[in-house]
Amino acid sequence: MNQEELDHILQQHRLWLGSDGEKGKRADLWGADLRGADLRVADLRCANLQGAELDTNIRNCRSFYKAKFTSNALPWLILHSRWAEFKDTVQIIGG
Image (tube, rainbow, N blue to C red; front, side):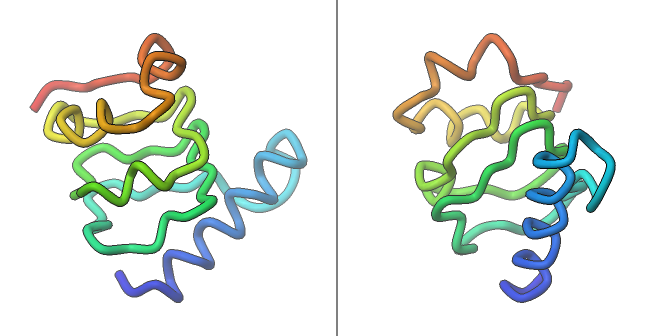
């Protein structure tokens, strides 16, 4: 996935979040390789990130409140400055 495709998905996700699901589409980034992607100001609340490949760029993400991940994401998620705030809301699905 290139940055342009990711930006489109994130734009649709912002619409979905802002319209309570009436417009846009929830981000489904299942299995996406997000290593090196620009996640500055990305709002990934309620997004599906199961199997997504992450790296330290997740620290730049605004929010991943109630998002779904697989356990391989955990080492990267705990680097986020707001991990303590989000940790009880995210779903960590087995490996």
